[in-house]
Length: 399
Ligand code: ACO
Image 1 (cartoon, rainbow, N blue to C red):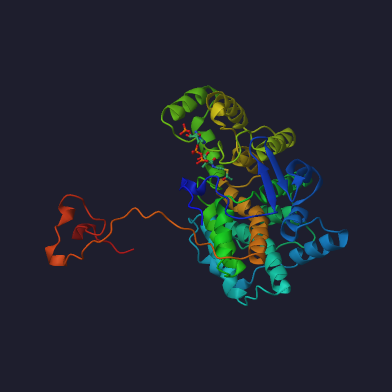
Image 2 (cartoon, rainbow, N blue to C red):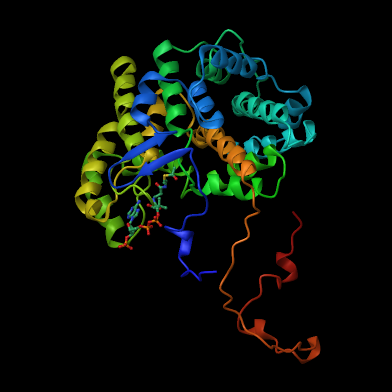
């Protein structure tokens, strides 16, 4: 076996062979099963892109109709899942609610037959169908309302916006939202997909696979960055403040949210499309106060960090699109998850086809040949360095 050098974050180390998607980070190219993302965004829709990713090729009309029909008719949640969601704290983050709900599906659909194509098909349909319903239901429940039932006459994107806002969406808004889902559906082995693959490799159920990936997507260095972009634009407050903000960040080597990518060293092709979608929405529904700040930010960051390959990533303009669609900021990452379920499931299926459990190695940096010191003979080291478990009685609390 070749001994490889250790690379933090496994940068540049192949962890699998995959035929699902391809990224050329130097030239800003993203393909799903060989088809450029720009073409899919323009000509396809999310359900067809999900089919392509998961089943490996574009569907015939009959296949697409059947896939769509199945998804439409599995959108409803069991009342016990809705009741479970009503017990969640309203102040909890929707990503945590989604992770809990995705894992709970494993309890309600506990038969696990990974060798049975019908089981795989049903699990794919259930997850694609129910995850949007869960996100919308949590939003209504935390506002004190009852969840809205899905509408079978609406397509995937329009139905989600309907369940969220309790009214049928404008057709342009629904189409743009659908394109956003297509753009976020898959992106090689990023952190959440890798997490999904590691979980899948243990041959657990697909609901655990998705729950594990949702937990990973939630972090601010991954899917959670889109929320922080809006917060950052709000904090900057005006176009004039952009340059000092960037200079201060660069001087302190602090990250600017929505910029930079492990693979892309040019502007993320999805950011290019999302920016155009945002502009279409502004044209129809009015300008967004943050857009001018975002444009100036892109220009100054490019000037200062472009030489390091730091450009807008997918999260930079998506928040502006979602804001115009009336979506609350803390739902941006759950919406990312709704879309990425397609990619996670594609990798789950691919993993099952050639499975070997993930078990990397490590470089041990701890001591060897230590003796066990009896408690009475140990120095009271926390006199110098406080232990997290030694607290005064006054501070003791039960939570
Ligand atoms: N702001 C300022 N500087 C940056 C940024 C940024 N957003 N991103 C990278 N850099 C700089 C780093 O400081 C570093 O500079 P140095 O070489 O002088 O030390 C260099 O560019 C390389 O950056 P790394 O952090 O080493 O790149 P890495 O591949 O580890 O990280 C990541 C990629 C996590 C996306 C990073 O760019 C980042 O934290 N961005 C902000 C968060 C964000 O937008 N995340 C969403 C990513 S897209 C997604 O997950 C869907």
